[in-house]
Image (cartoon, rainbow, N blue to C red; front, top):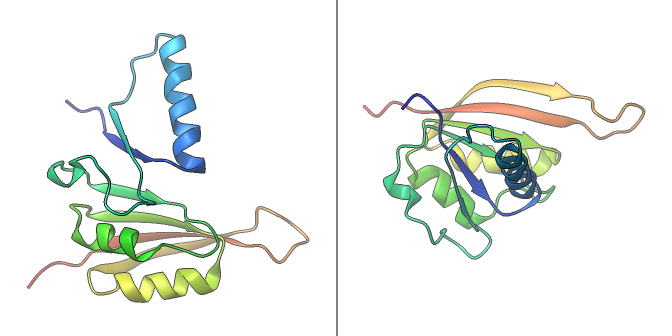
Length: 131
């Protein structure tokens, strides 16, 4: 199948995606295959580790990724991580943790809230090639 798979975790983005999935169902649009899990309690209950997900999108709160999610990113099958951040200190900390397995490909700063000091960062990480 050429349809991409999407993995959803509970939280703001997960809730939005689940509502979008429900809306697609109401409109009888062919849905993108999805699975859901909850990272807050540690490793998700689903066996997504056995799946071939290539890209992980994370949009953590200002505090950044917790240790469980960092471990999931490093140990998971993901070749790319798209990291959306509103907390520059947490982003810097998380990038240092993920640096063992991922390299920075690109970074974009987005001013979504003009006339405030809030800046969103959009970071693309790619898994380092093993020697």
